[in-house]
Length: 107
Ligand SMILES: [Zn+2]
Image 1 (cartoon, rainbow, N blue to C red):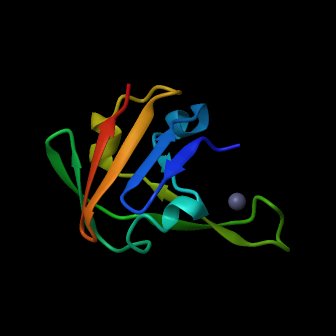
Image 2: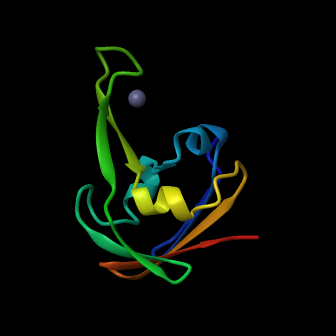
């Protein structure tokens, strides 16, 4: 269902219409392992702009009150501003080290 490619230092995903509408990047449980723990700050170099960032975890009951769980997002003012918000856009994250990541837009 999700089209992502992930390895130790590489994570690629495609923006969905829902993410574009909310201007935030959804991080699945699988992709969460690629990033520092939620709320832990790291640097993201987005096409030359260094952004201090963290993954946000948000409590959710979208599967009903019996199944509370978390959703994970990147939602950041600078990312909102700088990203081309278009469904189908490919995002390529690379890990330089535990505190430094890069993001570029794929073709
Ligand atoms: Zn939910």
